Length: 185
Figure 1 (cartoon, one colour):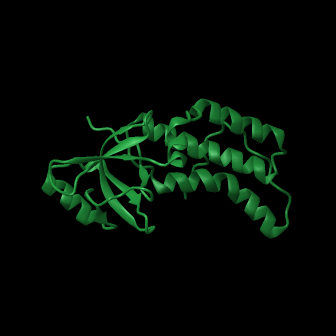
Figure 2 (tube, helix red, strand yellow):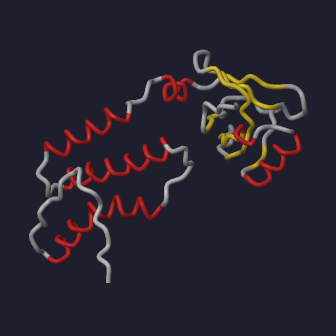
Figure 3 (spheres, helix red, strand yellow):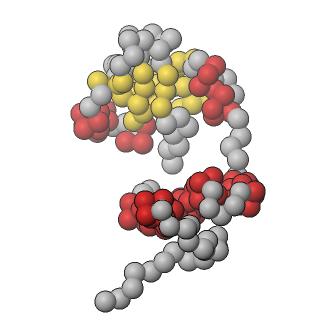
């Protein structure tokens, strides 16, 4: 199974003369992948020296050495490119586990009154992270935008309504409460 390590590449310091590049047209890049029998997942956006976005085909990567192997302009040869240090930091620094992130957001929400924008933002982001974790756990590559809308508006709608009307902020819901379901008509 092919695993792409870098979602985007900064190739502003690399010579791309012998590298297979496709100017920022994803459809054309996918056609090139099919013609050259390259995995579609290898398609990676990259910036060039001139600051343009292009597509390249990432075949392998070594995060310890800071290199990426790209498909050559001619079939067969591959090119090993050394990445700039600023790109390496993002991928070699371990990310924060989701459970720690949720715990951090819960602590932030507790430190502020429920009517504070910071607490509302923390609760909203917690719900977005729940959606993201659920999608990853179930192997879905996308999240339904309606679910994101509900996650964000369920927290922000009461605050915005109170701000517009000048009313008191409504009683906060519990952070673990389910999203409100529409009332049947």
